[in-house]
Image (cartoon, rainbow over all chains, first blue to last red):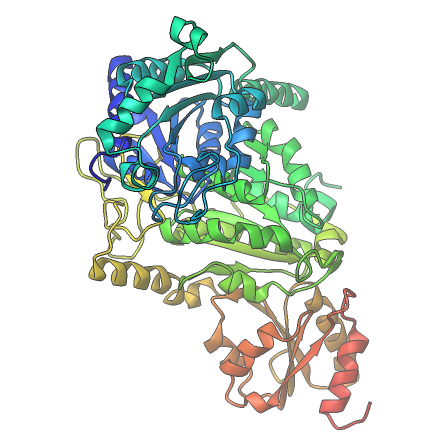
Length: 254
Length: 382
């Protein structure tokens, strides 16, 4: 399904390892995805899988989770699913702090439709709908998720696959809305148009242009994209609070 | 007298019917004139251990109930015109993935923001063809609170039986009207529970392989069978396929499972129809005016009756043709520009004898409005 060199397979690898290491029961996992290259990830896994509409994966996942809170909800999304057409659901899922793990597979492009710019592309990028280069500012996924209320927020890349596994493990175990942004290369569309080379070259770029939180490299060069766990807090979780509400309502009914 | 008798709004009658049918998950977004359904359920559902969630928008509400249906719950959302438009893509998803759910649309004037606090029946065609692509759909309606209650139960039953979204097409006048509702004893109206697979753990379960009777047993998310659900054309395992045979057969199945059961789905009421020369066909709140007029004219000896439709889609073509076979004229009474009239015309043997009595100004059509048109048809002047 994915092009040669695509980063999404590495994200899938990191995720599967995380689930394996956590020893989760496959029957307890629901993977919900939207539409796009990223969304096809749900077709590769042996979980309950729900391949939905463009941008609405988190809304479907909210219904699954609230109706059966014992299930583990994992929602991998691309740029569009998470932050363009699905942006509203993203911030509201974060605001509710509902116990869902959102993975933003950020490849800075709309791949499935052939290379149009996304809200994560940033300025000065070439895309099939930006022949004169983009003038759109990009979202900072980490800042947006944090501000919207996500109680776990992390960022890694496909170059740092083992690190990504560790963050995904923590995110899945975390009680509340967790967001893991993973920078994932698209050599076919983004890389080729923006002269970033093929997949190994793009992975090198992730290595060179990112720095781990607390590292000397990041301290010395604040222009690097920070990686790490940015938010990890215990806050009231939506389904638990709903459980309390039900108790209150039932008590009131005598 | 008894505590099962209530004086309620039509929207509350819908709530009572839904709870009677086993609703235990509702997601919605406030919109006039349907909001009372969400308000009532926000109080009632948690008391029964059910779930109510106010989502961030209409689209999310529709998606959330589909997700909740997959874990084995009976689900509903409620909306009106603009919200109904927004939900259409997800309604199509529920058609394609065959996920039981109920959508109440308490109609208001449209298009666009239209006439939010006034009555209309302008969404009849949208209920049929709002989402893209060929598909079967069920839309039900009612003209009084007792019938809203029972048709709501029917809606949940049909959603489970046919694994399909069912649209409850109410309207502002009936939704906000207050009248008596007697809630029946449990067991007096049958309730269809979800058909779940009998296939055990370790044995292949095919979520999209129909039984001989055409029904597809489900397995709840979280249960032992893991499978894929998608809005793409899919094979019997639920995995995407663009194999022409798979695509052809699935599309036919989605249409046929509804259209081939039109006789089982059809709901209607007859009022003074036996010897009627003039037949009024109506539904929802406009049927109240039609029935009122028919009673009046019967007292004067006129042979006039009302065929009240309670299922709009699939359109009960054969039933309408049969009932109208002997009529001198058929008048479709509705509050739109003739959406159901077009269906009636294409159903009957003499479409030239089908007329429209409508109002589209946000006011409830009155018996006088219908009477005036009837006089013209009968050649008695205006």
